[in-house]
View 1 (tube, helix red, strand yellow):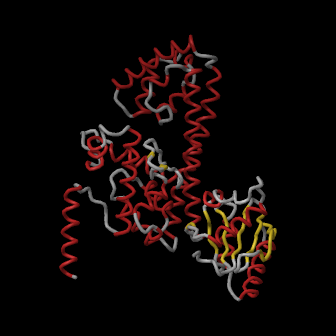
View 2 (view 1 turned 135 degrees about the horizontal axis):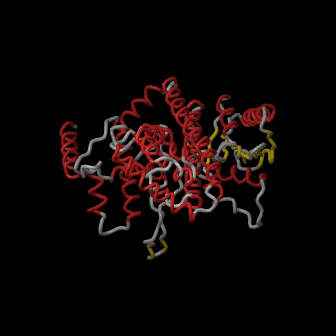
View 3 (view 1 turned 120 degrees about the horizontal axis):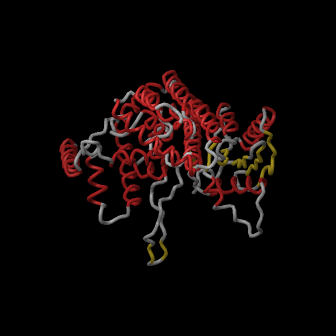
Length: 435
């Protein structure tokens, strides 16, 4: 039996500038259909009065359900929370799968609000965890950071593509064309002719001072750059056009990098002054016990996860990140080419992928960052699975480790699975003897 089978229910279909609400009586019949709510103070007050009217009519506060629409539902959600209204957020994947209850092919906001109310009243629906306004702001800051980071990456790719056209070969002279020395070099010698006409000693001194490397390095780099410039002067397309592109790129890229640094400082300041600062910092330090996790990765994981208490077991956290395998079975058939579901937090998967890559990587000395995961990736799965499948398996394991660390509030330890199993069995025996 559903939790709200004998209670009034309100379903809200949220759009950008307005919403539509439908209320059902305790017996499931319609109390009020298609109430239009403007997304302003008057509209929200109208909804609040409507909810109070339902409570007075049936002597029971209604349960309110709305879809998660990215950002459009957030103002309405926070408003109702402040006024102590029981509101639940439903994943649109759930509601969309149940909107074909009518044979007639039609999709409108009015029908959607009714189907949400009907579904949530008659079914035991899983709802999303609601974040506090304070924590929600932190999530906005973190996601803004990655948006700016993506803009910088996209700009970098476009600039690199320009190199192939206007200054071919230059991409082989420097490992990273957006580094301090390459950018400084391009600002002083933006075209092949600028370098070819410049005195040799002047260029070598510039390379040496800019990179803070030795004379031999500067001389070798000059020889390589000179050969590239001679070729580019003959095969490059309109190299003079590249001079203005460099100037625009340098200004924009440096601005974005400054924005990232400023936003990172703002995120740390916000965490320090938040009411959840102590618990967040504790969990932050716990995640930093993983080798390969940097400050921004730890902050992002904690921001996406929210409260670890919302996940009763590790499998639910894995599903939230969308790295659990999809299932395709029918009768005796069992699909063996299933991809991961990707139904959870995309930003969480992104940083988790980075962490997985760092965990299986080896240092310059040849030591694996995480010996257990490296052995799991290369030996246990090495001959059985493809590279991408193995990497997803590592991501899955990392999430289980993260769940255990945050749940038990203990730092991560690289422990051989056999030793871990032995310790677990010993602990179980001691608990049984104590009982």
